[in-house]
Image (cartoon, rainbow, N blue to C red; front, side, top):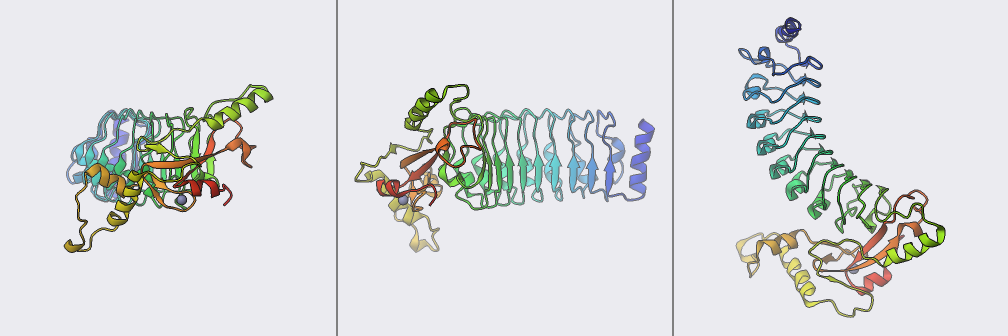
Length: 369
Ligand SMILES: [Zn+2]
C-alpha cells in the first residue's frame, strides 16, 4: 500500500498533476512524500477523505502553495495548525466529520475561501475572525456544540448559505439580518426561543428552516411569503381532540412569543404615547446612522459602545412602516393555523408575529399587505 501511495505521489509530482486523490488510504499521517523537497507546486485539489489523519503539517502552505480545494472529510483531525492561514489561494475547505474542538483564529486569513464545511465536529464556539472571510459563500457548522454564533459573522458579505442545524444555539444574532446575500438559513434542532425581528426583511433570504426548536413560538411576519420549515416548533397539539386543540390554540395566541433581552416594553393598541426612552433612541439614530464625513459633523456627544452597537444594529424595523425600533415593540400575532399555510405546516403551533413601532401601525398591519 505504501509503495502504491508513493508511486501515486511520484507520478503526480513528475507529471505536474493539478488533482490528487488520496481518499480511503488508511493514512494516519500526512504523507511525507507530499512535503519533500519543493513539494507539489502545481497541485490545486487534494482529496483525502476517509483516512485517519489527526492534524496537518505546519509547512503545508510552503509545500502545496497553490491549493484551491482541500477535502479532509471523515478523518480524526483534532486540531488544524495556525499555518492553515497561509494557504492564500484556498477556496474550499472541507473538515466535516472530524473531532475538532477548536478552530484557530488564523482561519480568518484565508481571504480566498468561498466554502467552509465544519459539520459533525465538537466545536463549542467559532472564532470571531471568521467574519474576515469576505468571499465566503457557504458555511456549514451543523452537528457541533455551538451555543452561539459570532456577531462578526455579519461581515461575511458574500455569505449565501448558512447551515447550523443540530447545535445548542439559543438565539440568532440580529446582525445576521444585515447579510444581504444570504439566501438560505438553516437552524433546525437548536434551542431557539425567538428569531431576530428583521429576519426575512432582506429580499434575498428565501429559505429559512428552524424545525424542531420546541420553544420557538413566533416567526417574524417578514417570513410569511418565504419557504419556511417549522415542524416541531411551539407546543405540540398532536394527538389532542378537536375541541381541546381549539381551546389550546386560543390560549396560545395569548402567550407572548420569546423576545430579545433588549426589548424593555411591549406595547399594546391602547397605548397613546411612545415611551421617552424610545423617542430618544430614534432621535439619536437619526444623528448617528450616517458616518461623519468630516470632523465638524461629528455628533456632539460620546455614547457608550453598547449604545452605539444598538444604534448601528437596531432591534428591528417596523413591519408596517420600516421605522427603526430599539426598546419597545407592538407585537401582533397571527397563528399559523389560521393562515393559508396551515395545511402545509401541521406539526407546529407557531404564530407569525408582526413587530410594529406604534399602536397606529399595530392597528393597520395586515399579514397580506
Ligand atoms: Zn410603524
